[in-house]
Amino acid sequence: MNLLEKLDADVPDPLVDAFEKWHDWSIKKPVESEAIMLGTSVFAWYAMPDCVKSSAVRFVGKSAILGSMGAYYYHLDDRDNKIKIAAEECQKMWKENLGHLNPAAQVAIGVGGAATLLKLNSMVERYILHRGERRKQQEKVLPHVRQGLVLGALTGGLAYFALRK
Image 1 (cartoon, helix red, strand yellow):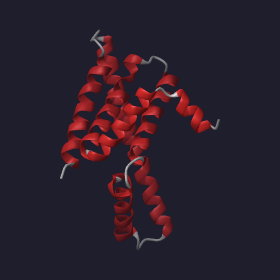
Image 2 (tube, rainbow, N blue to C red):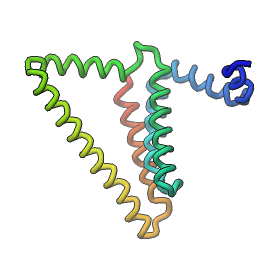
Image 3 (spheres, rainbow, N blue to C red):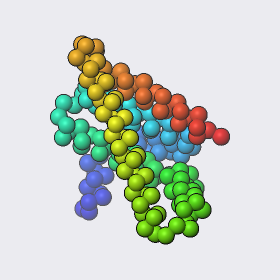
C-alpha cells in the first residue's frame, strides 16, 4: 500500500467529501470563496491570542493560516489566480518605472521599500496586539476575538466588494 492509498484510507469520507464540495463551490464562486477565506484567515490571525497562550504555538498556528491561504491560491486555475496576475502586473510596472535605473539602484529601492513595508506591518501588528492586551487588562471579555471579528468582517467585506465585477 503506497502513501496516497494509506492517506486515503485514514481520512474519513465525510471530511474528504466536505473538502471536495468546498473546492467545487469555490471554483464556481471565486469572489465569495476568496472573501470568506480572507475574512476567516484575518479573524483567526487576530483572535488567536485569546485562544492560544504560547507564542510558539501561535507561531505554528499563524504559519498554518499562511499555508492554508497558499493552498487556496494554489488550487485556483491560472487564469483566476490573482496572486500570479498581481505579480506580473508588479513586474511590468517596475520595468516601466524603474527599468532605466542601474541594477544597484533598483536593488536599493527594492530593499528600502521592503524594509519600510515590514516596519509598517510590524508597527500595525504590535498596535493591534497591544490594543487587545490593554482591553484584556480592563477585563473585557475576549478582546482579541472581538477585534478579530471586526477585522475579519472588514477584510471579507472589502475583499468581496473589491473583487466582484
